[in-house]
Image (cartoon, helix red, strand yellow):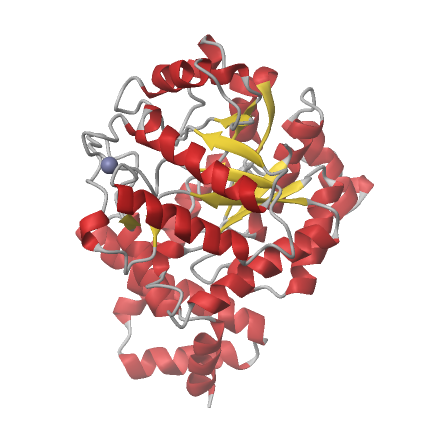
Length: 422
Ligand SMILES: [Zn+2]
């Protein structure tokens, strides 16, 4: 299971790119060893199927999956108990008991222990799957947290109880539509707390399992200990979910390339011997090199991040530069990004608005459209997102919300650039 997860949201590249571009990029990834593409449908941002953004979001999901199929990859769809925002309040999940703040507590999460809640989850899942029948869904991935979960007494502890029952039910719905679909059960951030989710899942699957095919394990930082020190629940193949695009980097994609060879090697050293693939979490194409490193780990568990860097540099640039030392963003990017955002914030404060417009006009006049967009990304993000976040210590979730509202797509920024230049 040599996957990659395209997180298609916030107007990132996966959200905006066209089918041909996506196909070409996926083909590139396939040549590094990727054989399945994961995507989700953004229920969390939508009111219902009648929301004006609902159909475009279906179109984008279909575009990603069609592009994957065109170049011979399989498709992997994520589902869980986060539904449209217009879901009835009486069916809502109880907020999670999450003392360490690891699981995420947002979106319209539905309690599957309520019969009508369960029905709504199954109905909505079937509706989404039904919109993909002509393309095909090969793997289903069921996700416990961030977003997802229910903390009610009938669902607790979620990962060993409500989540398992709900996942089995959704797998049944998916098999009724796609009889050969494989089911991946994610255990992301299990036991952090509530304790006992891993052991409870192992117990549940030991009593019989004809529906789960893989276990996915990972967490925010190091690889979870449980599946390294115990048998994998159900004795199923184990896959991971390494984060390759957000580590020490904000705005995601706003700091250029983001190579993390040392971190990815560190994570692979922890669990590579027992892994049978996985899905790196990706926010964009700026960390292409990280995808190559992880894809090569999946292809050949004995490969090293350094050997892939050499191969990557030789292929993308020239064999002559293959042995040059490659920068590792894991060592430098945090300082670099903070420096850039501090400088821009300070700069903005020193100018009156007219002066600033005049400086921007001079600067932007000779830039191409892509440079103008990149510049406004940085200005918007810094001035409207990072600075207020630092000032009020608000969470990244709020920041991401600001980002989405303020960006409103590249066209707005181009328009703004043109107003200033005119
Ligand atoms: Zn519940």
